[in-house]
Length: 109
Image (tube, rainbow, N blue to C red):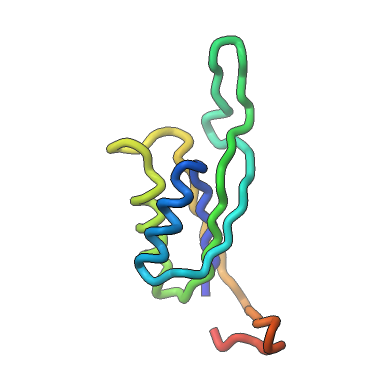
């Protein structure tokens, strides 16, 4: 099992979530964050914006679904035809165990 964290522009979060749901990946968690990547923020006139608003979309999935979810996130989070700095980042981490709270049971996968 994998946990995928897609950090995307706020204006792309709805599109990414919708595309995931359309492909059958309905379960996700998202939250608003701020930070910076390689671009070190942006300068507009005399004002420097050191941290940019982003949205993290978190999806737990079976190993065999990982590449499809990554492709969906990449396709729908990218801006412009070739993408732009600040479009986001995707991290994939292994999940050792998961539990369902309502039934107090360990999940099979």
